[in-house]
Length: 150
Length: 150
Image (cartoon, rainbow over all chains, first blue to last red; front, top):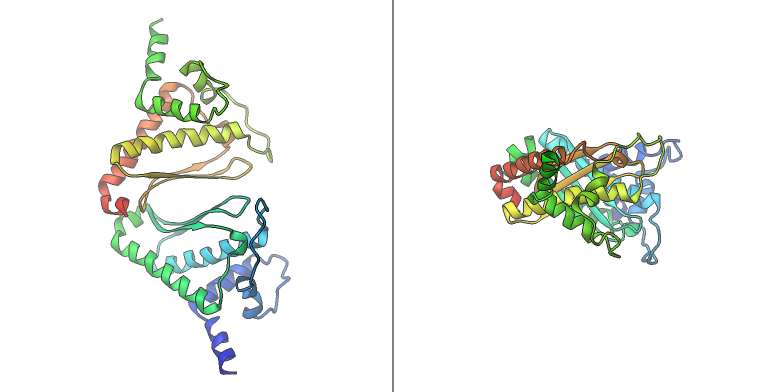
């Protein structure tokens, strides 16, 4: 019981709140209206088999990657007060690169392999990863404020 | 006569030489063996109609964009001694963004519209554009050497 209480509170972190906002923004027809945070985020924690070689990546997987990094972009914007721009360069087989740019600075540079399986073991793992990436990004902006302002 | 002599000499610039090397590298089957620089570069100076809305971009146009910026990347590498990484993010309709990254620095950030028509009026115009972009890129690396080294 106490464990499920912890699970719910993690969905109220700044990152999770923004991620949920991003997910809802893509729900154009309100199909997921009234869904709980747990249900909306469930696809991020689902276990997936490795995709067969040559398989085309599905739209839902690409959206998981995009919403995760877009939520991070919004948090970075909140921290530094400048626009963070997301570049998702993933090919049809789910391999590629994700970049977050602030001014002339690359604040995040991730190689993506098998985007069809993009996800995390637990909400805690996702929150920890987001916090780590956010700390690196804001650290870079703090170190090179001029390049970030260009 | 004197004009055509000038036209030929421009193909010997560092940028044009590298661009020709990039174009030849994509000619896997040697289809263009023995072609002159002028003939190989001709597609960059061809006049094109605006593509119809919804048209899918052709492979040759995408290659023109890629080889142009890849040649620039090699010149930047030569100037600063660090790897320059090219990100071409162009959608099927030919719209998108081209980035050149050195370390954590975005040394080139170009919005591409209608990549199907990517080209230049003359070799001189292309050379001038390449030199301008190269100057901006090396200027940024000179200004933020630490970020470029990350």
